[in-house]
Length: 548
Image (tube, rainbow, N blue to C red):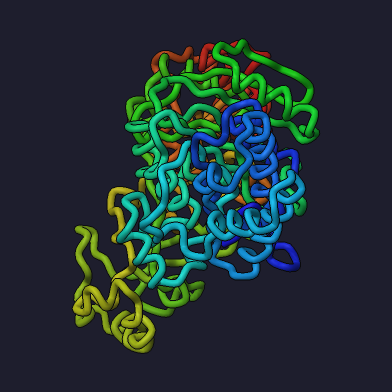
């Protein structure tokens, strides 16, 4: 574990440290300030690393205690609790704590006693003797689920209700910390904000919405918060053990710095805060979604516009738009071919492969070796000798797949069943990963591979809908609601596309629908955005997503 440091990205030594001014901002926002009586509660640092947070914590605690004539080991024994799994980090933090205490005039013996009482080596997520905390602060490690041993993931899933085998590690730190947070207490982490939008964060979002208050979120995607560059998207998140229905949201720009942080701390701490815009950040108060709903993260102007559109317009599904993903085979090397003679022609389904399309190889033809009949049943291999021979030549590889082990009698099936209604059906095809929505119109000749999503509609003409989807307004929805990949690449997944709200086709004038269709056919994003602004009923000057 690496607390007081970040595993959001890997530097040469595997560690990325939080800048000192970010540490100060986290503590300020949590309310752990020297003016308060810090001797009356416990602060927990769940992953202390080499002490980036502990140094400032102990200094503030000493200042608060000195002003109250309470700087003694007995009074402060339960003031701090810090954890880390790494022995070298624990030793370094222990030394740092002793040093700061001695700098404030404490005897070496008392300083040693407090350091030993405060800093613990162990797995915070599995600890069962943690104190109740008035404050929990730090920088939890961001470790992908796939980088955690299966046994450890199982142990975490057994102990934590929001943790599953596919959950990234930092989610466990949120849940464990909320468990020990006393009434009126504050949790404040600098950490990845993906849990606010992705599937594995749903249970944690529900827990926070039900029992706590997501009080403030300072999005630092563009800010220079760490000593090294990071490959994820950090935010300072403040959660309080109290009621509340609004979120103080700060969107930091690239030049956000120590000087700006002080102003943000004051703005967040204020009981009533007017919107605040500077050259380095935008700060607004927003209503919180209910339950486990995705929390929008974008520029404040974009968030407010999308909230207004969502209240006024139907969802994609309500507007007659249907979305799904292409077929996943579980073994593309066997099920996808460029040889049209490899099996019976009736067992080959022309395939749309988004990567070929986007790389310019649009005349490259691929087929799905199709084991399904038109009714969604697996064909009998005895009826297709060429198909049977082909699959049996790859039987060992196909049987090793998880789906085949679960269904040994169906060992030659694709991972997904085919959606027979898609065959010969016109549809729009959208890439999973892209900087912008670039829908492709298929007139019904191809079946989509799983690296793209398909879109059909009962109400919208597909070329008109294509123009709407490629607009800045729709991209603004995805920018706010969808998890981004490295470099800012957006994910146009079905779970996010379904959250987009659009007008009904009948509510848009024929002239505007023609403009949308013409822009789509011409791949004219600017034209599509102008027409979409009219269709959505928004100001033409405000149709930019203003992504940060």
